[in-house]
Image (cartoon, rainbow, N blue to C red; front, side, top):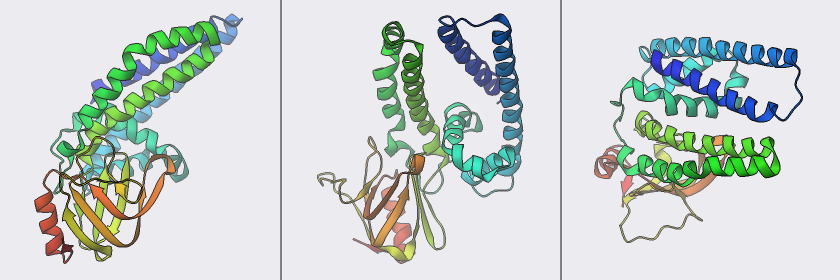
Length: 276
């Protein structure tokens, strides 16, 4: 984990250095101005490096006392930032960076009772996104910088890299955030994409989805693109599904993905849910 922390900090430094060299070479920046800017950047990177170490220590402590990795991660972030408002503001980005660059060093034995790791096809989706964007990114950046300047070029580059990092994070997030059934709730999770805490008493029926069944996303919630949706849930009232960046959906039906749908349906039946 210490090696991952160092590589992440060095990688951030290299990216910032490239941005500086691209932007500042076209500006008349005095030597003292550059020195101040460089000093502030190095201080910020050092601060982030130390905070990252504090966070990883806090995460280990929380994992020893919390029932789930998801709860331990949230508690460790809260303890490190010491600001609920800041955590709410940048929580999605911090979760993305953690799962993209650090979670794999925690081990993968966290599938939980109801895993959807295989049915999510997160690895395949990441490869599609990465292969369709990364090979062309240097050419796009150079062309934009030549014709439009460094500002637009770096905006496109950073957004493209972030989209790739986001999908990279899903590969680990689907392993660490399983679907759970507690005494009174179904805690639906799909990586960093969607969450929902659904009262079991609100589930009207649950059934397997036939392979020939056509699903229309206009009138139901569906697990993200690329996943094998194999279980349909119907609710008495619309359930709220919360996505990243404050996205919300309220639906009476949900088509979700599970690695072992039979065991999942059997557990719901044991809790009194009608199986169709």
